[in-house]
Image 1 (cartoon, rainbow, N blue to C red):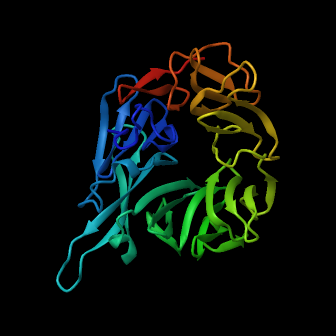
Image 2 (cartoon, rainbow, N blue to C red; image 1 turned 90 degrees about the vertical axis):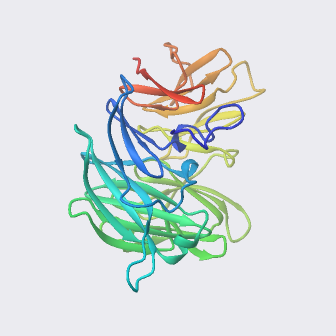
Image 3 (cartoon, rainbow, N blue to C red; image 1 turned 180 degrees about the vertical axis):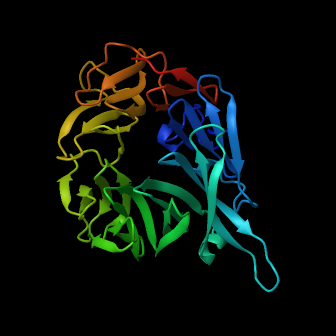
Length: 357
């Protein structure tokens, strides 16, 4: 089940819908698990297709760590961590297996490819794999665990490995670049940008202690942590050259932010919601507990100019640029949404509702 290992004692999904192993594409949901991917019809709930790994998974307890697949043209790519058996004089090992499933019927695997993993990944108890993104015929997969990382660039036409970057935990793909954190001194990685086609390093930023990087738009990433001089860092970087676009507004350091796939970065935690322009760093609006008559909703999803959540009076939708309540109240607060449907958590099960106007 897509929510297994992801809900708290209140039955809420920790971190919201972006942590679910689900990709919505048109009227279909591609749902990943440690062992395979299912294609679900959002209107009927019927399973339209299913593909599984070709071998035994490396971690059978990885339900809560599986991340969403990514769209690459007319295919959906899902990576898996798979054991390889011993053969003759060769010891067993582990690989990343990437399975590409067509976005049209009969929703079968169009290709598969494997990449050998380093020994640390096979030995780690916390290793995870993520499909970071795809663009211009390239896809990027990152494997991380126990302070180690490696990223791979795959050609989606030839289905072959094009480059390997040891030590890189990729965070975003956009404008022909891969942006991520490169292993440096202990707990002090370096933000870097590498060429999507070749894996060649193009820029390197400032060392950042306890750094966290997340995508903040098609050409922007956010990096937070602590600078070498001990001061706090919370910046928006241009992915093309690593230049600082802007400092994040004060007071948002503890908030996770999600780009709405339009033009706004929405940041939230339990007691506040705020919106930031990812190009200028301008604070557009904010709602906080104990400030005025309006109360911040518990944000569940952001998409194309709307912020969805649970407010004091039930499900709400806000304008992402202004923070104003939308005139049409949603039936439910979706965890994932696109133009066709919204996915809502009900009694620890995901249900689909048709998208409104």
